[in-house]
Amino acid sequence: MTLYSLENAQYLKEYYSPKVINKIADESTALRITSIEIDEIKKDLYDLICSGYFVNMISISPKISIQSIVKSMDLDSPDVVLQRRGL
Figure: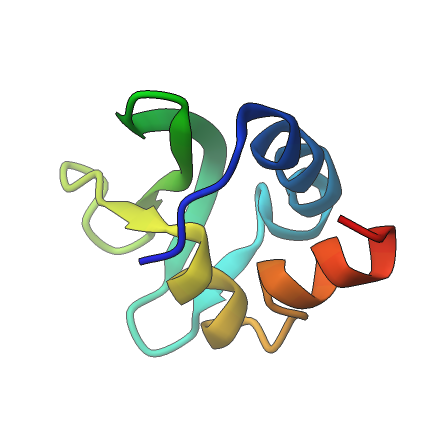
């Protein structure tokens, strides 16, 4: 798991939000992403966690790391996004 500074986590949240929120992240399970949250894992180190629901099973609300979501949606990894930004 890659952890980020708060500044990088906020940037990644802004970058990925329009790309993943209200989108189906995994066609095989019909996982729809509803939000991205910044979660402090260790002091001053953060991860981005996506919340959502399975379209066919609304009672289950998974929380999944952004790295898994971008891989399943074939988006650039957070490392690539931050490299382009120059961080």
